[in-house]
Length: 76
Image (cartoon, rainbow, N blue to C red; front, top):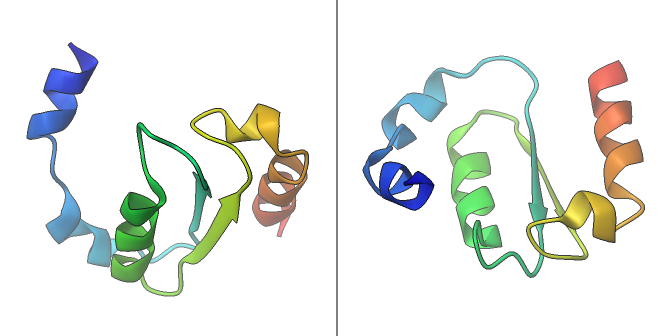
């Protein structure tokens, strides 16, 4: 059901309205949400930071740099 819902969910035209600092974090080998999706999001959000991590959809558990990076971003 989640995959079906995702197939109809499209907010690309609204991403440009985001004005807060934005971190787009992606797993380099994610087969569910591939990096090209993160790149497309980051390209549409002004001043977004894109970071690719080693791993797949579970990159938080696979790349030890991911969680500290996100915590640092949120702390700033």
